[in-house]
Image (cartoon, rainbow, N blue to C red; front, side, top):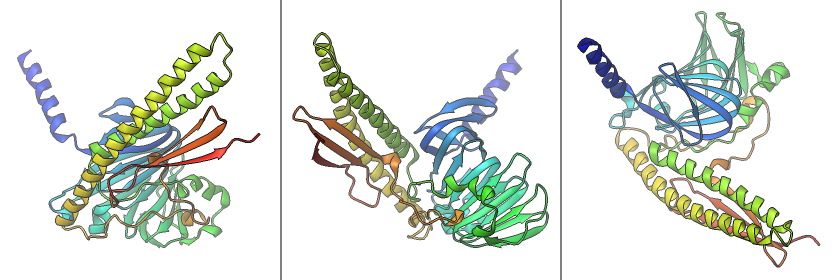
Length: 360
């Protein structure tokens, strides 16, 4: 009995020692779950992911941001694993990352680690291995293990069955499960039905790739998500108040007042979280540079569209933008947009309010 208890204690201690926080869920449009040592849990915006975690996206898309700033976008049906994540802030060149896509679609964008030492990044897609020599790659593994890889920006090496293909921006390559890749070709020459499987990833709006302080950034996106939820409830309460009968007006007015107060409190919380995250992220960038990362590492804005044969799309980050629309008693519509700025700007949350007359 004593040996069994000691064994359990050692297991708990070892689990705590090797639990390495790696990323947080920056955006989630749908549902996803993460598994740690076989134990599955639902994740949401702001959830922290660790080395060894596997992520399954059951609907929509999920955007993960790692501590060094690298981005992973996943689409519905994807099974992804953080095989190894060692971010050495004191000596960035000693960092090491191994990520695996077992099924589905993934978009990968380089952060500080890849911008400092390219060979430190290894992406496994089915039976293929992708070496990063650039910044932005999209890959897809179908249910039969066949692999597609296209490049948005930079260059990647695609190796399978002892053959390596070099893929440049706007081009793609395919390989059968366990087989050698074909010659890279322009995305326009790949079957449209095949490219369509990853088009949502090519247009996925992603955050910047600067390094972050995980907990502060996770708390920020969680707080902004809560603000969005409260803004929606406020809009619903306004509609309910507008349609209320005389008998219902008192209750509707009270509900509306409570919803407005909830939004006001949430705006203050988001403002504070933005300031905290901005300061923490600025420190994270400074630490990375002091640890040997190039000053510009993780600073390039992600590309959109090129890897799926489409023109560039907007790059604003919806995960940190909130729109609130209210209707006043005078019949005008007030729209407030709260945007949380990136860490390179002054640490404030900037609300912009515009008022327009309601249509008669």
